Length: 122
Image (tube, rainbow, N blue to C red):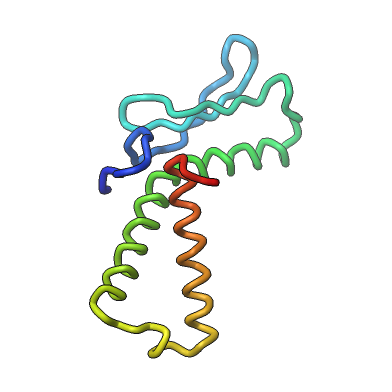
């Protein structure tokens, strides 16, 4: 994975690991990279203890763990798109109008997401 230029986060890959209950009876799920804990989600006070809620917390941890790879992929895709434009490939003339509009929308959203990850959102 490329090192990010604008974002200041712990390098990936990140993984999800479930811990046994701690001394307070909480059952944490942690996101780690190879040498440190990134975040911890606990099923303790303040959380509903039903299975549906905990399944959602596990899904949140999985999404968090995917963040570095998603960030790198967004940057790579935007780079390819920008390279195509710089090389004179007029995608708006090659693609059908509805496809070009969708591509333009997705690229615009990707730029906003990348800016948010870099702390530059408006």
